[in-house]
Image (cartoon, rainbow, N blue to C red; front, side):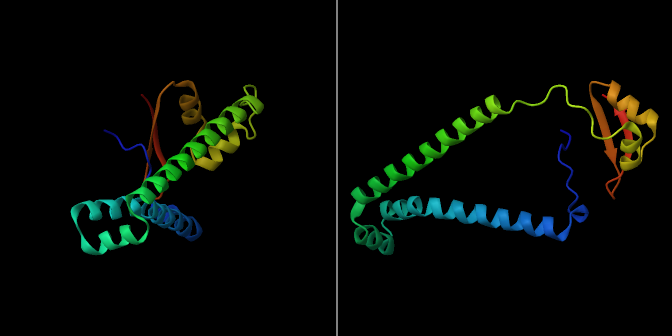
Length: 144
């Protein structure tokens, strides 16, 4: 299988790298936060003494079931809001089919450092394979 993601972190700015790290760390913390009740329940079922005390201290398994219902409700509400938002975005602002290009072919060739023939070949083909060098510049453009 071919790699579809270009993994070149050295081409990212420090701001992009730190932003990606913060998003990843926040995501892992959220996973841990949402998995903590399940880990506590598992430990209680396995008979871990300290977790058994914690379950009893918070009101037993009935309170845990109430919390799981609240979690399920929150996830359901978030999913419904996301679906409604997606449908509204599709209805209110459909993608522009006849949008005019912001840049011309000469500017594209200059930005990507390719010649006009390679650009025309890439535009004409239905499927294009683009090869990059280690610094992120386009090496070759092939059909297929």
